[in-house]
Amino acid sequence: MADRQQQQHGDSHAPDPSTLLHRVQAHAPTSTQIVGLLTLLLAGAALLLLAGLTITGAVVALVFLGPLALLTSPIWVPFALALFVVGFAALSAAGFAVAALAAATWAYRYFTGRHPVGADQVDRARSRIADTASHVKDYAREYGGYLNNRVKDAAPGA
Image (cartoon, rainbow, N blue to C red; front, side, top):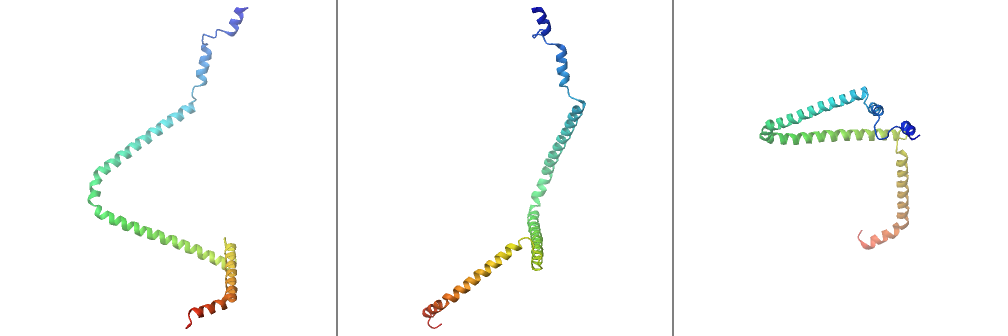
């Protein structure tokens, strides 16, 4: 009976070649994965080659054009500075023109009653300014006589 159990369960110490072969085949890459890996390797090699050529070209250009740039730098520095100033002025002018156009468009829509974005806030601010001006006017009327008498006391010739 012990022999039968040993035959049914097999010897656990000795590897079964059929299961080992199945395991290897189960983990074998498919043809799509192999083509993908080859494509990845070729693209990586091409990019590595291009990076090497770029760095080599940059070093060679620096070696040959460095002295030329050093000798002509008294010309290039003022030219670059002037180019920067002109470019900054042009971009600033364009930005201010766009801002002015946007403000004019908003004001046109506001005054023609189309209620652009923020019109409610402008109306609230306008009413608050009008209320504050009214309060200041009332305060000046109420206490204005007192202040006028004080001013006349401080400057009798006025």
